[in-house]
Amino acid sequence: MDKKKNLLALERTFDVIRFIITILVILSLVYLGVHFFRKGYDFVLKRNEVKDMEIAINISPSNEYEVKIPWGYSTDDIAAMLKDEGFIDNVFLFSIWSKFIGYEGKYTAGVHIVDKTENYNTLDGYEKLMYILSRNPKKKPDVKVFIPEGSTWHQTEKILINAGIPIDDAFWEVAKNYKYDYEFMKYTLEDMKDKDRSNMFEGYLFPDTYIMDPEASPEVIVDKLLSNFENKFRDEFYNKVQELGITVDEAIIIASIIEREAQLENEREIISGVIYNRLNSNDPSLHYLQMDATIQYHYIETTGKVKEVLLTEDTKIDHPYNTYVYPDLPPGPICSPGLNSIIAALYPEEHNYYYYVATGDGSHEFSQTYDQHLAAIRKYQNN
Image (cartoon, rainbow, N blue to C red; front, side):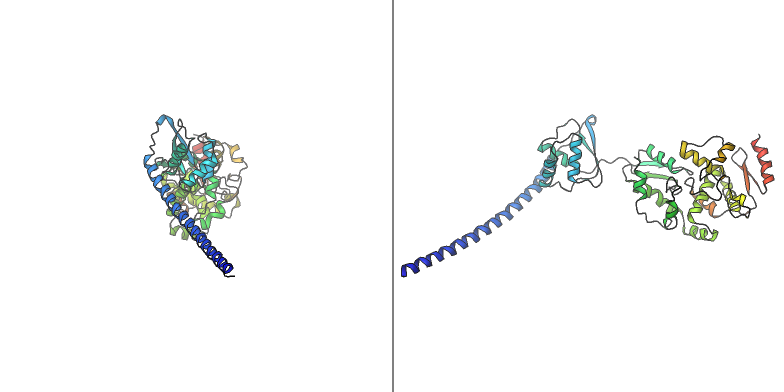
């Protein structure tokens, strides 16, 4: 009996020892796991620091190849792009290796320069690519862009392209969907998105000289022009718009017509007065503004240039911007007016002129009656 009790006691002792040993083993494994994780993490960090210092990027100009990482690309997207461009074979390995050695989330959008003659399809090559693509992207020098007064959005687009700013079919789509926070847009946004306009920003891409980053996003490029308009359209202008009984957009439409019609500075306010006189006339026929510049807008947008001589048949073109065919103001601005034209649109000269005709030297002869206008036409257009 005593022997049996002794055996049971011994078994219990062994159970306790086994339990203690199991706990110790578990604790040891946890300790070792944490220890090696820390060591591994420190190794990766120190390894990357050493690697970053060891990797020498000496690429001959003749061997340079631009790899562009678009905004929002993940490591998998970048790996797939590198494979498509022939630099790596294994997308999965590149992605896993990026995570393991600490490059995950460190790649920067923009243009990076790699060597088109180097074999990057090794682990060391992968690391070199990771190092290059995680550095600051290549910075193109800023460009100086001059946008003249009276430029249409299409002409502005060509100016930007010629300056080295890439504008494709998606440029304006991206720009128009951005949430701009401007005072003037509180009054104009609905009008700007009018379906009859070829571009919602027409009239608001303020003409000026700009310093631009050619790699900036579409919304940043357009925002620079719109912010200039916002700064130029002063608080007093909003008050003047209300006083005149028009909208901000209508003011810019009138200003754009003045910009394209007036060649002499001292005639802007006079032409503005003619436009208001006709719009406010009780004679419905005078609401047809008959401004040649609105027809020229059609030609600029369809052919890229003005038509040298407008004929009678041009005044009959069925186009919403043709103010010979459609009364009152056109659906939108016909160009981006400068500050002087905006001021003229808001502060028209008070007079009794309803007509004017070009004299041939840049000036106009203004008339109060249609008979006077016909006489002026015979005088100057038959010479």
